[in-house]
Image (cartoon, rainbow, N blue to C red; front, top):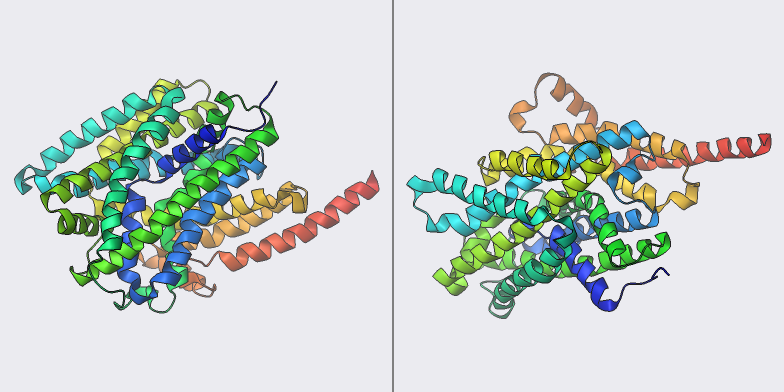
Amino acid sequence: MDKNHLSRRNLFLIGTMLFGMFFGAGNLIFPVFLGQNAGRNLIPAVIGFLISGVGLPLLGVAAIGMSKTDGAYGLAKKVGKTFGLVFTVILYLGIGPLFATPRLATISYSIGIQPFIPAKYDHLTLAVFSTVFFFVAWLLARKPGRVMVYIGKILTPAFLVTLVLLLLFVVLFPMGGTHAAAVGTYKAAPLLTGFTNGYMTMDALASLAFGVVVVRSIMDLGVTKPSAIASNTIRAGIIAAVLMAILYSVLAYMGLTALGEFDRASNGGVIIAQIAHYYFGTLGSVLTAIIVVLACLKTGVGLITAFGDMFKELFPKLNYQFLILVATVIPLLLANVGLNATIAISQPFLYFLYPIAIVLILLGLLARTFGDEQLVYVITITVTTIPAILDGLNALPQSMHIGLIKNLLHMGAYLPGFSLGLGWTVPALAAFCVSVFIAGIVRRRREAAA
């Protein structure tokens, strides 16, 4: 007889596993960097960041559960099988071997290892570290049935202990005040800027990718009834979201108070290294290395496993062990670009894909209100994709804003919120409303004809 609910212990284990896969090194550095840039506008900036960095991933997990699908492809193919395949492949390549996975080794090295290495050995040491890092991640990902144990029972608790120790010192003994001036778009639009900066965590995209891992883990614990899988997936997502919200808020506060001792840094990784050394000296640098390497390793295992699972589902003839090898070797080769360059390269991709993913998640949640009509999916996603492309182009380096791209960006400037990467919002809302109206007419005519 099928179980309807997980035990509290197993539910917490699934929740911490999901948190562990979400909370990687990017989740450490981006809220800290936000804290420095937002200054006295910290609270609205953090609220915006939490909406996209925590709220959207929670909605993504909920959409997977409520739609009774097991991941990105199951949700995306509601638009159409071709779209579902293309979207899922792009999604998994982006949050996997092309962008997210390579930066795991880069961030680990830049924050945790590089401070101990003489500059002349930097490139060689990065190559050696990247090789060891991805070899360990590959070993853990070879047995996907053990991922819950590795991440939920071992890596996540170890990571939390080291991180919480540092954050306790930040809260109890802050380095400075909280009245620093905001910079950039945080001056005039802190909430919206915080929202789009939450894109950089990639967690809303990851919520679609990790769905297959969560669903399989819940089923392995004896829950096979679709409605029970859905409810337990959502409950586990809430556990992960609460943990992330607490840590993001304290990390942003840490970045702001650091301005009492340090100048603004070029990225959040530098800030974390400075803060750890401030409180603990050389021991702080060692502590930082442990925190970052654990954070990146556990996320790397999750991403490699999710990539192998999904591509095995999409292309059954491919071998899982071969797929995770591909998902390990490609980021190993790309890991030497550098942290700032890695972030800059991924930004246009995120500004393009995030709007589509957000709208897809919301459609999955609202499916019952419009009868899950495919027409609504097709019209809304199609209209959203056009301004999403413009948002992605706008996120390219200024040196590339020439010729055709420049002309397209002039058109995009007429969209509300375009300068903040939110030019897609009004067209998406309008398309949804119109498509629901049209779908209603079509449905009534179909019913009348029957």
